[in-house]
Image (cartoon, rainbow, N blue to C red; front, top):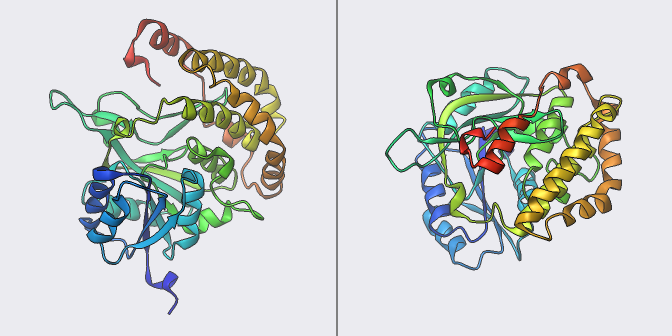
Length: 341
């Protein structure tokens, strides 16, 4: 019997010099009440011995070892290609799962055949003096082409204990229906756009899945995201990618005529963001030039969506929220961390 018929969940950890963090991630996976029948690690050329430690932790672990860091998007695509289950759990190296995480997300996804992705409640470990801080309860999409994690940087509260539909899911610990990922691929392009390298490639996939009629669900099973532990989120390298990827996100997915009407706002906000990032890193605004160089390939993705989309522009527009400019300005200039979207 083919492996695809035997396995309901495949799990893949994406690793790059994960050290103790990635070992803790794997241990939390092995403690699941619903143990994934296939467990993989895609290693991006780690040199810290973490791959060898993972092999020692789980003798059944399947390994894809890249010679160097190929980026999150390509590693995630390798995991998709290797997955033999009906569902794929992708895991950042800095995530730890509560024992019922897989069981609850799988049950939420299986209840509705139109669900293409499920996310849990991602929390950041706190100092023990108050409620933990939310990392993500799904994705928000704004009408200026920006995206954000729902509830990010706010204290956990009862409102986040309610399951429901969300625009999309963060790729830190999502459960994807493999049929949906294959539906979102076309030609030589795989689910995650490898031009993104890292960051926002998950929002790009969210948007494409939405055009194709797949829904995303939030199930408040807990995973802990040690986001700051890796230290790469605000590096000059990553800021440049983030700026590039925000433009590619819009170029890939915001179909006209609606997208044309939003273009001035997108352009203005991109320039403001380039200025902000430039204050942190003089090279970050070069992400705009990177995006311009890579734009021609986006035409193929837009043609794919125009030919294959199953929902109207109005349905996509209904998910777009107004960007909280006042709150963001307060956060930027007055240090109000509560203003995070």
